[in-house]
Every structure is written in structure tokens, then in C-alpha cells.
Image 1 (cartoon, rainbow, N blue to C red):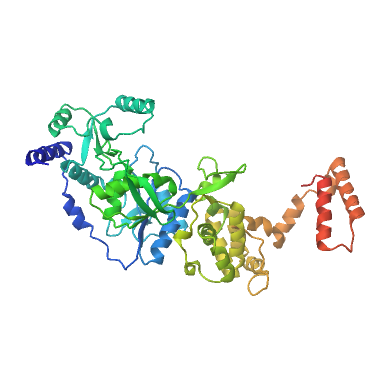
Image 2: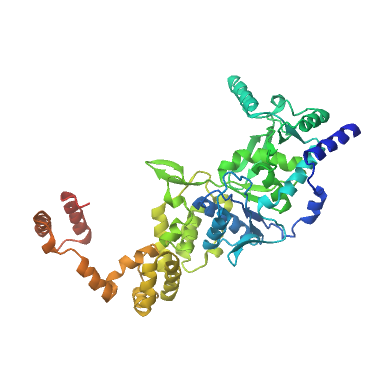
Length: 506
């Protein structure tokens, strides 16, 4: 680029950001110095968008990120990516932060609630993207000056026309190479169009060659080859806000993220993001793309869906009374298959002592099994002391279940007696509770006043219809016919199953 071109590029950049006071990028490079970390320490982040309730899969990913930071002596921070203003919801940030707190996913830096108000903490903020607009603009202006970004004046109709031509020619769709007539437009012509008031976006001028490969070493997927990305993506929209692709690269660089953990739906974007990092002169972080949570639906696997599955809502199991620690244990079962054996061998150890390996996470879809989750929860609850169980149920019911809360607070001593049955130093602790929402109905007969009330409300034999009475009598008579007092347990159980099938009881 000769001096005249540099001058025109500078003029173009100044015009694009006319009236906006921006600092040079050198200010931000100094403002956000490289973190002083121990060898091998990871800086990870959880960076959701406040566009709806938090997904259970988000909790899963956040847990992986937190564990990788903690086990290496690194930093785990929470960043809010709220540049998609059209999809943002009211109190979306509060929903994210509260869910993180409820799951004990407390970040070392980022965003939290203090005295009922959202606040940011840490030296690398702001941690809410909408408050970093000037930072993104400064880096975009720098790219314009360097000839590595350009204003694109395509209308929606023109963009659709380009896509139609590409599809008709069976070519990749997108804005790349000669398809962008504004990619190599002289700066003076771009200046004229802007002065004429023609709307535009800013696009990244990709240096990638789709016919060449880059090698990615993903901590979950392993070593893979991908085509270089040659798409001239939008980096600044018409409203002046950055796109996700541009903003997160700037943020990860300035905040010192050196390990990006996100589900594998983002893996196809890796080449694009690597290209942005390199063009901007940034260090490329390591990547890990674990498979998203899936469930079986009519024998087929599919992603856990916000629209179809109530359990996709992160608060679902908390409201049901599944302990947070049990959910964390279940997720560790999903992450590393050897955790289950480790837990059996170390029933009393804290899960932080488990040697979690991100490389052992499955490449195929991680199957979310609610039955297995409740089984893990039963085992977890069975290990609690009487006092700890009471404490956890008290905390849960105060928030989610007034009926249970009133019972265990007004009859605390009796509740402690009930909770203490077959608990503690016993060979086989009770495993009848899988979630705290079951406690009231499971133990109602243990409280005299509730049992008497239940007896009055129960339907008696005398109140049944003649048809119902006859059915019960026939079942009892048939049972007496087949009953063998000398039968072994398994033989007796098989007889009961046959009897149940005969009368279509189950």
C-alpha cells in the first residue's frame, strides 16, 4: 500500500466513524495486558446470549469450562454476548446469572448479582458486549485503514441475486472472491458512496484460500484438516453493532482466553475464526468442541430442544428438587465414562478430586438420560447425613415448594427422625428419594396428622361401584389360587407379573 492509498484509507476510516471518538487499538492492547499465568493454566469463558431461558446444555458446557480452568489453576469468567438486540429478552442477563449461581458455577470474573443488581467485576471488563461497542469499532477502523476490511453496499435484493446465481451454478454460497464487487473498490469511490448516503455494512477482507487446508488440533475431536475460510463476513452491521464472529474474537484476545470450549455445532466456524485471529495479529486459542446433549426420541437421537423438551430448561431439575451436586455428578458421568467407577471406589470423596480429562469426552452426541440422572441423584441423596439432607430440603422447599417447607419447619424434630431412618452408618442406606419434590408424598404416612387426613380422603371399599368391587375380589381370588408359600423370591415375582398381565394391571 503506497502513501496515497494509506491516506485514502485513513480518510475512508475517518468518514465511516465520523463523529465517534475512538481510541487507537494500541490503547486497548495496553489496557488489557497479557495475563500472568502458571504454565499450562487455562483461561476459559462461558459466553451466553440473553435471548431466552438458559439451556441445560449451557450448564453442561459451562461446567466443562469451569473444570478446565480450575484444574489448571486458571481463570473462568462469564461474558454476556448481547449484540443481537432483536432476539434479546427483558431480564435475560439476570436469568443467566441466577442460573449460574444456582448451579454453583461462580465465575472468577465477569457478571454477577449484588444486592439485587447486575454488576461486573474483574480487570478485563466490561464483560457485557453491548458496553464494548467502541472497542469493536476501534479494531474495525484499524482493519479499514490496513485494507483488511471494506464497506459493502449490496442491498438485500442484490445479495439474494448473488446467492441465486451461485446456487444455479452449483457453487458455494456466500460473499467471497469475485462475488464481492466491493472487495477491491478503490477507497475514493467508497468515500463517494458513503457521502451519497448509500447504506452499507463493513466486511472482513478474508485472506483465506478455500483450496488450501488448515490443521486444527481440537482437544475433544483431535487433529483435523479444514479448508481455509475465504468468506468476507460482515463484522459491523448497519446499526454499528458487531457480529458475533468479530466481537468474540476481539474479546477472547483482550480478555486472554486461551481455551475456547463450545459445542460442536460451532466447529464449522473454526476456520473463519482462526482467519480473523491471524489477520488481526492475535494468538489463536486452543479449541474444544464437545458434542451437544442429545436425547432418544422414538429410537432416534436428536438435540435436546428448548421447544420440545421441558428438561432443556436449566431450571427444570432444580425446580423438581434434584440436588445441584447430583446433576454435576451426572454430567461428569456423561463427560468421562470412567467417573462412574471412580465414584463407586470413592463414595465419600469430593468430585473435585476426580481427574477429569477433556480428551476423553465423547465425539458422538452425549446422550441425556433422565432415568440415569435420577439414579445418580438417589445415590447422592443416600450418602447425605440426616442434618445435611434436612438442610438441602429446607433450602430447596423454601424456594420451590411451600407445602414441604411448612411441613419440615413446623415438625422439624419428626422430620429429622424420618430422614434419619436407614441413613448414616448402615450397610445399605435407603435409596427411595431421587428428588426433593417426592419427599412430601413419600413420607406423608410418617406424620400422624397428615396420615389421619389421608385416611379420611382415601376411597374405601364400601364406596366403590359393584363393578370395581367385583374386579378386586376376582384379583384376590386368583392370587390365592396361584400363591405358593414355598416359592422362591424370583418365582413369586414372576407369578405376580403374570397375574398383573392377566388382569391388565400394568
